[in-house]
Image (cartoon, rainbow, N blue to C red):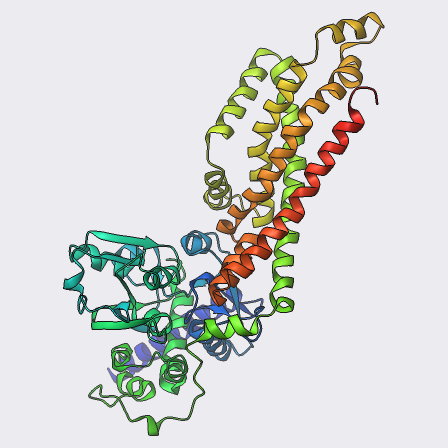
Length: 525
């Protein structure tokens, strides 16, 4: 009997060892490049992710430090160096970007909710947050959320704070896409109060001399790292990495450095190593905070990071970043317009001179793309086609989407310009013995292009501005760079003026070129 038990134990141990070896192999294959890619949104700002006040090319934040710590932990598991790489994505596109495999995980203050659990596989929680109410410094009417029933309250759209406000019967709720704007509107009196996570109010309300926190914290929520449902091996490795960060005290020190360590974080400890995690997080077995004197000294970040960025970011620091965004904007505009002009001409020829089936197809194309929002086309081509096995790079998707969309408008411009040419021009060409193709190429189209030149220039200027939509599919162009930099420094006016100047510098020459060509190709030249 003992022999049989021993055999079973040996076999069970072999199975466990084989499973772990297979898991490590699968994880190693996923991270074969030595890079752990994670998606976030630097527009969100402190303390999650933001541009470094000392160097706007770098992204810093407490989640950046957690990602670096997890990469080191995974490297130890695999016996090879792993580097964390941040991928800038708009908040609303993070889940589609994860599904498209642009990165391995989402680390961006992602609240663990039942709805999100249906979409994502979550790690164990890495931070426990609560909601905090902020008001103006001289506000005496509001001391709790109950006082806000007839007040105007700002928050992040779709956030836990938004849901809490609705559940408490607050009727005048103003939702924002960014976490900075609610506090700016609160300062100038457009809002009576702001309700947001205490991680956010710690940096945007507490240090602000014009604002103050009021009332107790509300609710309780958890941030988790989101992964694809099938990534069980990666999720297990991430959980093991978070455990290591807790036990070693590294997670506690990250939170202390970013002014986020508090008694709620004792709730992160669980499982067989609960006491070890509690000790690493800085709590006793009874979940009581240990005195700060027992922890190593850490240099805390300045909670006035935005003010520091505003002071330190001189023109020579941020101008190259906006310049790089402008280069991407120019590239997208000219390549997309070239594609649009080519497709548009084909559509025009099909509509004017093709057989009936081709005419109807061309008409259907024009009506479809003129009637569908460009942003929808971008999303479908980048995220939707992935489900059908078609993976397109972000920049190529942007060029193709813009080209196909604007081709519908160029086609209509060409068609009206060609039809404006007198029919007598065809007859004159035929009288000279030219076939229809030669007449079109040498007589009709050169005259039509002069008429079409003005509207085409307008479309190209419009395309310059529409390129701002590509930030939704993780293409970093001029407007996206402006949004990230301005929300990391509050230099909305200074950066906005420079961004506007760059757009004007790119679009004005088109107008001059168009008028010069019109003069050159006009009558008598």
